[in-house]
Length: 65
Image (cartoon, rainbow, N blue to C red; front, side, top):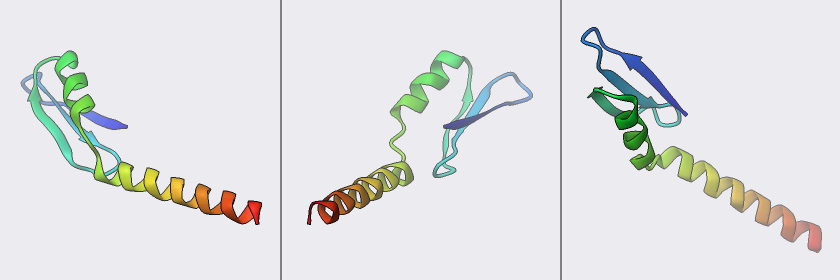
């Protein structure tokens, strides 16, 4: 999830909505925005996914016992 804003000069900025980090600024095209966003490894999203996996594994283990 990203938030894209357009600058007065027509270029774009993009920000990750998980960690609120600015991923890129003054980007000229949407294709460049897509590439910048695809390269972003969000630490908040990764931690959230790991926690969800851990909770699911613990629930599965508890169900089996």
